[in-house]
Image 1 (cartoon, rainbow, N blue to C red):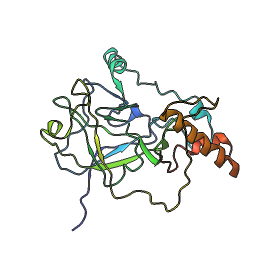
Image 2 (image 1 turned 120 degrees about the horizontal axis):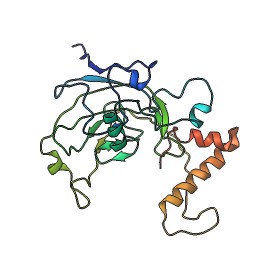
Image 3 (image 1 turned 45 degrees about the vertical axis):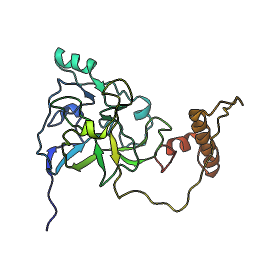
Length: 245
């Protein structure tokens, strides 16, 4: 039996800016932003996506694209649209409804269980990665890319009550659940850099995971810079290699 052909519901032209696309794209969530497509529960469909910068980082080997990158740019529009843009929640951080999920093994075959808090909730995707480490060591957590996602959606009625227990005072104190797919990197050799709770000045901290994490990364940068890379280059590489923390 031939594999199902997914229906393309969000087409993208990578040569066009986000606000010049056939369908409206967004980098914020707001109840007044309308959906651009409808799908049937269980239907296989495809969503194409621009990279997280909206195509503003070019393949020209210039660091100026990153140095002068402005992530606050929004499409000029009506006063109502500008009001939505200032009120809306950005898609950059991780959130209780999903948000930015930088998980290196979240690839083909994965399942994501997203909490739904309101009637008529919408689904959106974006910010694909070519390579992803476990830690966001510098600027962003991966090699960014444009691409497409093929997926199916199912509504688990009563799933919030059955599977999620709020760890806090409100129903918002929950998080998505990620079931990792069968496709992931497999390595037989690893280098391990230990980090301890002593900072660069020699001050000892009590079981401080943030200080220990930082020290482990600095130890890795110091070591890898002995093999022909500058420390800045190692720092840039370290966010998208298979780095586990």
